[in-house]
Image 1: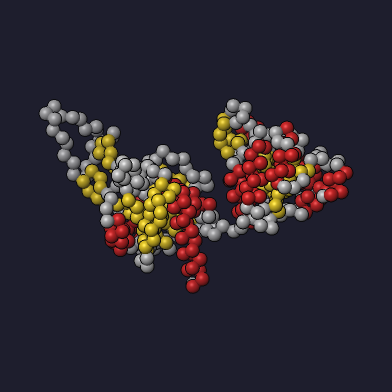
Image 2: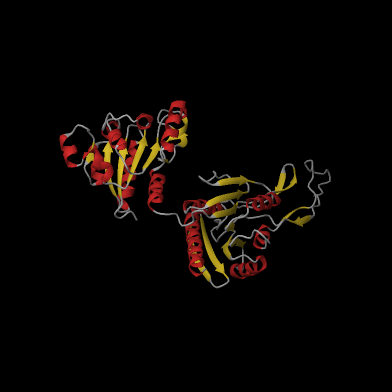
Amino acid sequence: MLKDKKILLIISGGISAYKSLDLIRLIRKNNGSVTCILTKGGEQFVTPLSVSSLSENKVYCDLWSLNDESEMGHIRLSRENDLIVIAPASADIIAKMAHGLTDDLATTTLLAANKPILLAPAMNPEMWNNQATQENIRVLKDRDMSLIGPEEGEMACGETGLGRMSEPEDIFTAIKDFFFDKPLKNINALVTAGPTYEPIDPVRFIGNRSSGIQGYEIAKALEQAGANVTLISGPTNLDSPKNVETINVETAQEMLDACTNALPAQICVCSAAVSDWKPENQSQQKIKKSDNNESPSLSFTQTPDILFTISNHETKRPNLVIGFAAETQNIQKYAWDKLERKRCDWILANHVGKDALGNERAFGSDKNKIYFITNENTEEWEYQPKKDIAKKLVNKIIEHINYNKSIG
């Protein structure tokens, strides 16, 4: 993936320096070349030997080393690499960069650099939020340097807040994004996920067992492919995906309104398990048990059909509308019927309910089995993690968009 790509990794001081070893592994695993500068602070947490062993290159540490300067030199270190990554980027090195200070090999190389620079900050939350640090960050952004993170979480010092270095996988993704255009860049995508709840009274509702996992994974995969994603989510226990605008709703009508407001979009994936009915009259007070044990009588009316509404929108229909069909029997037949009735472009059908061993097939599970159905054909996707299904669907979307570009 990174063949012929050369990366200069600067490891500054901080407990997060140990994560840099995993980042080196990821770069090398994907055929990238990585040369490392290890600061004096960085050496307190990882050794030159471990960095050298993983990178398969000499590690540079000392500005005043005659051998290092004759072999490579701080000028050539920046010139002979395509991208400079600082991970972790401590408050100290950020401040020195902002003010042009050069008291070691790393900062001297950075001041002499003529290549793009990516920083992965890591520090105590109070240090990150300090006005001095924030002004330094603003200066570096104004100089077109890129940042990834920091993240929210617990620090090694025991405090919690914004300051954790991004995970190596996320930094590696940012490196890939530098070298390769994301296939869905500048594409707007709308995703619905989770259940909807239709209130009976202030404490009871009609809902379903959807966890929202599949929709959230689709939103993540679309964002990772470069799309601008809006996620309309019913009630779930999931964290909002990074870099995704998440709008939380409860009822089908609220979800429809949010979807309509989010249009126009080129792609719409309706993976939410929307309640088909709602009580015709919602009680404003909790319905109490009667003394004679009589059950209350409820009458129902249909909820708005979100997939049909979006598929048949007169002015803002997305170029690609994808629905989901959760079935307990005759899966392919019902999915074909839904494709025709809703007038969407694709349907992903899955079997919900429990298997012979009593395990949930889809709702609440991390895995799913899908029938991918279009007007032209049907594909059966094996039982696999929902994350992998999301990636497979996004690859289908990318192929569809590229094909239509090629003929249009």
